[in-house]
Structures are given as C-alpha cells and as structure tokens.
Length: 121
Image (cartoon, rainbow, N blue to C red):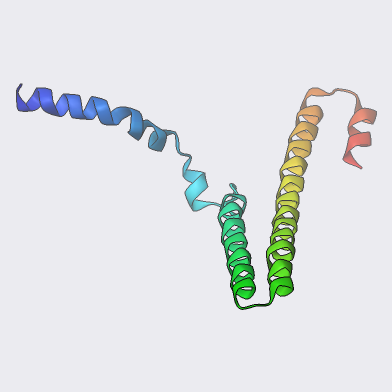
C-alpha cells in the first residue's frame, strides 16, 4: 500500500467524523442565537445532586441522621425544582420564537388585512 492510498483511506475514515463540523452553523459559536445554558444545566444539576447527597451522607455518618436525611431529600428536591424552573424559562423562550415565526409566516401569506391586524395585537 502506497502513501497516497494510505492517506486516502485515513481521509475517508475521518470524513464521517469531520462532517459534523461542516454542518456546524457559524452563528452557534459567534452569536447568541443558540442557547448553551440548557445544555450546561444538566451538568450543573448533577453536580448539585452529588453535593447534596455527599453532604447528607456525611452528616449521617457524623451521627446526625435527621439533618443528613433533610440534606439528601430536601437538597435533591430543591436542586431539581430550581433547575426545572430554569428549563421552563428557556422552553417559554423557544415557544415564543415559534409563535413569532408562525405569525411572520401568517403575515406574509395572508391577504386579509383584518386578519393581519388581529394577530398584531
């Protein structure tokens, strides 16, 4: 096998993994059109969960069972609720964008002036 054939086979093998970078939108990196926080929120939730469970187990081993139980159960629930509230805010934002896009489509496709005025309110 020559060097050129070897190089071609390496490029062909790497092509499938490099195709995702070609499809990556440049606006994702340089502009704030794509939200990164919802993706990072999952990691943050697991860190909080680990911290609360660790703190609770530590309190249980120190002899304060009830405080440890409160940390494990209460902290786990509180972190879950807090992260879900943030996710709800981002989903509301996404839904508003969809509604806005649908309204723009309606404005461009509709010839009825009263219908356009109704949806502009």
